[in-house]
Structure formats: structure tokens, C-alpha cells
Length: 200
Image (tube, rainbow, N blue to C red):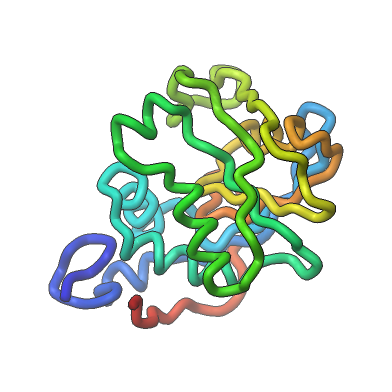
């Protein structure tokens, strides 16, 4: 079987990809009047960035299972629902996947915490990847389900935190926690290494 990140002849990750992974520390952000606690698994570089890319643009369910299983280990105590930060409709159609919903379902299957599709994204939005905070469009969502008491947002990548802040605002929250696969902003590494495990 092949490496989930680079397709080398090793599974779930080849040695080079495994060595490129850096565990990321939690981040606290204050944006748009929202206090955010961002809980990432990896820094967004090396194999971690490739795993997210493979999920987001190539619909890799193996990448989703690997990332989601690790995200499940970081769910905050007391969480009563997982709320995916949805992808805009145009890109969901173009790439055939809403990656945050898939990650949330993997986390749910491991933890038993229900997924609550409480938010709806706009049909289309300008791309924000590669842009700094001042260049990024303000992300807004519509609330379509009443939020639970202690939801945790689920996203694939946190860069500036603006998208997650928009989701928290739609939920009507001034404080929010977000579980993410990777953190692309500044962070200190968590101590300890990573060892790949099998992916069903």
C-alpha cells in the first residue's frame, strides 16, 4: 500500500513524510470580538500540508481517516457536538467534497460526539489561500440549526482564524473552540514526536 501523503511504497506514511510532521501547539486568538481557542494537530507544512491537500482536492478518504483519528484525540472535554465549518458550495461541487464535514464524521465515529451541520456557507467566495489577513475576504455563514450548549468547530486548516471567527459569530458565540487538522499561523511545537499508525 502507498503513503497517504506522497504515494511512496509505504503505508500509512513513508519514513520521510513521517519525519516531516511537526505537532502544533494550541493557539488563542481574539478576532472580530470572538475569543478563539484553536486546537491543531500538526503545523501546516511537509506531509501534513500534503495530507490536507489530498483530502481537499483529491478526495482522499485515507487522509481523512488519518487526520480525523488524530483530531479525535484532541477533542476538548465537555464537547457535546461537532460543527463543521462548511466549504462554499461552488468549491464543494468543483472538488466533490466538503472536507470539514468528512473530518467531523471521522472524529464522531471515534468519540461518539454527534456532528451538527449548523452552518451554511455562501454559494461562492473569493479564495483566501495564500493571502494575509488584510487581503482575505471576511467570511460569513448562515445559522441553519440551533447550536448545542458546548459545540466545537471543526476545520481543516487555521491560518489567520478569520474563517473560524465567522463561524463562531454565526453560532452566536463570543468564545469558541475549534479543532483543526493543521495550523498555518505562528506556533510553538508541542513536545513529543509522531508515530504513524495504521489507517483502516
